[in-house]
Image (cartoon, rainbow, N blue to C red; front, side, top):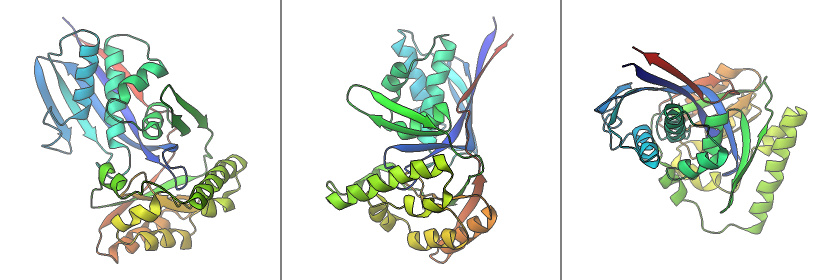
Length: 304
């Protein structure tokens, strides 16, 4: 009897891009890969090795696959999983979203069912309530999204191909929960207006290729002023990117990764941001990434 192998490749994501708090999401050319077969019992190999992820109770991908199997009224007997994690955990680059999306796509591939938006969100929101991370991981590209009690609305927006994303990943984790806890329960009216103006300007700037507008358009008063207390050197890292020619710079998702948008001087910008972190005793690395426009990829192989 042949065994079915499902291979899933999911892009990293960055959310917010400054003013688009819980709204903007962008897929990046950094990927997690999941290769899975049906098996009696759960066997997990991780690259790089992670004792945490190799525990089935902690592995989010396995939890999603198990839930989908039970949702179909079937017994989950196990799986043999190889997980290649290139997206760092708890850095604001969508590592959790990658596992959730991969698990959903695996389940639907195994059961040979088409996946609707409604079904996707019903399942995904059991594990993570943020469409600004989930959608780019699934669909790719730049997406604006909102969630109501009844429905999730989103629109994919063309993103300029000449803009690259310089991400600077510090050597400390920052959980989304901790980054949420520092946010105030209410904000001043003027700060809401501030972000509405800049989020609108961001969209028009990328659509019209008026890149000179991005420096001001990527400013924010809803989350970064509060979260920067958790990021040593936050202001200096932003300034270093802009001084080296970045179009704009901001926190990636909830952090701790910082990012800059640029059309040139990519490595120079990245090195300067790494240096700014180092002045505060933080080690970091930079990567120059493209915008991923294809999203998740699924391949099914029948093995005899």
